[in-house]
Length: 242
Image (cartoon, rainbow, N blue to C red):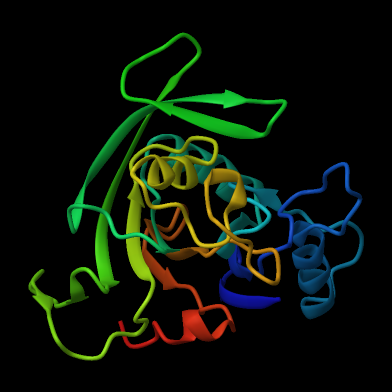
């Protein structure tokens, strides 16, 4: 387990793909229990350790997960997530590039509980929830490498000659939102068989990373901004310089 940030009220850790955030029917040890044990041992805490789960990442996804260490922080962070005051960006590796280098996607998603899958519609349907995200291509064989001014360099070497790296900012938080919306755009995430990828990743992951998290600290009111380590996979490591 990698700790990215911690203080008396919260802790942010890096979740490996394959880990679960909270306990489920599999019986596997969740990340929340690993974090509790870390706190218990580091701070020599007797008895039970309080840890509040504020949000989750799908099992095959890697990246930043935020936990609350106090009940005060938990209540305030829950409100901040509900009000859209925690800003998260994701990185997704896809085989296909979108038609436009950046844009906003709006769909209405219907969750199928039995299949554990969401379906996207371009209009509201019964049982649907509106889903909105913004995206921009960071590097792609189709566009080149994105510069700081928003233009793209053409002709130079690419981090990957085959895959496109898309940065995503969620404006809503729906079940499998990024996975479903990118697939609907024709850009399924590498390794995500459920949403149209042609093959799985060897480790069972999907190439989606919770990359950056920014918010105002719920107690100290300082600005917090953290960036995730990249997975050890060589393709991810090739993206280090972006």
